[in-house]
Image 1 (cartoon, rainbow, N blue to C red):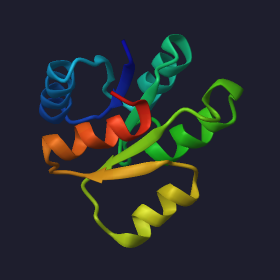
Image 2: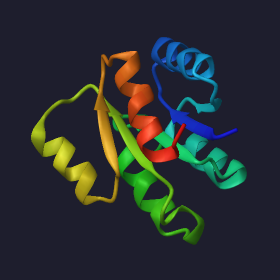
Image 3: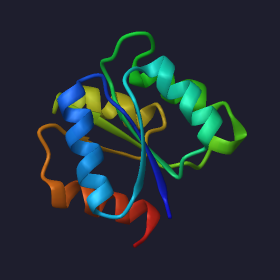
Image 4: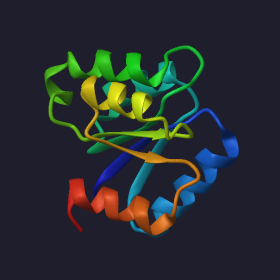
Length: 121
């Protein structure tokens, strides 16, 4: 079963998103900030990472930068999960090496389709 790491500092969003992904038959690991997300990613080696941008400890951009330096994560799909639909923020994330992004609030079907795009069914 494919494993997804969700890094999100908002408890309600993190819990609801984890539940939604579990109902879609994914194994979900979750972290409440960038430092915890980094530690979990290095330990668990997830198949895909969904990450908020603005977080305490380590923000999403820095987390992506650190992980992309690790050979294991060079090709791991990384999706930014952001409340900002600003084109400049999205471009910054994609230029930094993210594969994609989804804006919050999100449609559950859109999120699952995005994951299927990278992990298959």
